Image: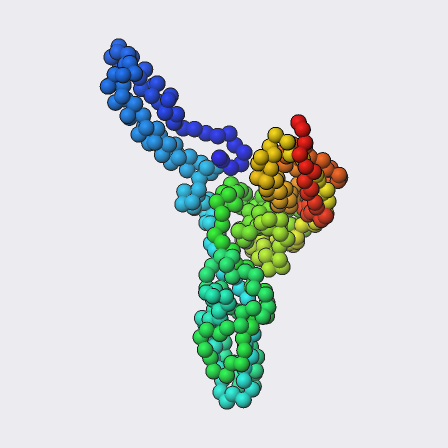
Length: 372
C-alpha cells in the first residue's frame, strides 16, 4: 500500500504464471519448438520461474523505495535528507524530583548530574545537571530524565518515584512532584513521510499555510494534525492535535510556538499563537444485529464489531475539521460483520477546520440474531 491515496505503481510483472508463459513464448519464437508439459526442457524453464519472480519482487521493492509514497525506514531517511528534513529522534520522559534533606547537616551538598532514581523494577530517571545545595536549604527540586528514550517513562504520578539509587548524604526522602511526561518514540514512517512531502513549503519566507504546518509538525512526532488560521491581519493561530485525538499539553504548545516563532521560520510581521483545537461533543446510541446464519461464529463477530466501533471513535477524533457522519460508522460495523445497524443519534454534525469532534455519551448494544 502507498501513502497519499495515489494509484499503485508496479515496475515489473511478478505473477509466476505470466512469467512462465512469457518465457515459453520466447523459447517458441526463437526456436520454433513448443515445449510440452512433460518435456524436461519445460521443467527446466519452470524451475527458473520462482527465482525470476523473487528477483523481480526484490527489484520492484527497491525501485519503489525511490518514491515517497512507498519509501520506509532508512530509504525514507535518505528521502528526508534531500529536503533537509531529518527524522525526529526519540525523547526521554521528564519529571521534577524533590529531595528533602536533613536539617542538621554541616556542609554544602553536591548532587551530581546523572544521580539516579528508580521506579518499578528497572525504570530509572537521572538528573540533568549538577546542583549545589547551601547548608541552610533543606529541600531542592531537580529535573530528571528517564534513562530510556521513548514513551516508557511517561505517566508516573507524583509520589510514585521514591527510590534513590545513587546514595547521597543527609537525604531524608525523594519524590517526584510532577507527572512524568514528554517521552516520545522515534517518528513513525507515515508521519515522517507527510513532513517530507510538505517540506518544500518551508523554503518560502512569505508565510504560506503549509510552511507553518511543516514547522509545527517538526516540534513533536506526537503531532498528527495541524491547522493554520489567520483570525485577523498579521495574526497566525496554529491549532495542534496529537495522536489518538489527544489535546496538546502546554509543553507541546510551547514547543510549537518556539519552532514557528523562530526568526528563520517566521515572517517578520506575523504574530504567532498556538492553541488546542476546540472540541465539539457528539453522542452515539447504536444497536447492531448479526445474521442467524453466522450464529456459530457469534463471539468472534461481536469482538470484531466492538473493535471496529472503538477504532471509529479514534479515527473520528484524530483529525480536525472532520465532520461527524454516522453513516461511516454504519459502514465500518457492517464491514466488521454486523448484518444490520440502527443509530438513534444525530447523524451529521458539521465540524469547522479548527475544531475536533470528541465522543461524549456513546453506547453500542448487541440486538441479537436476525434473519437476512
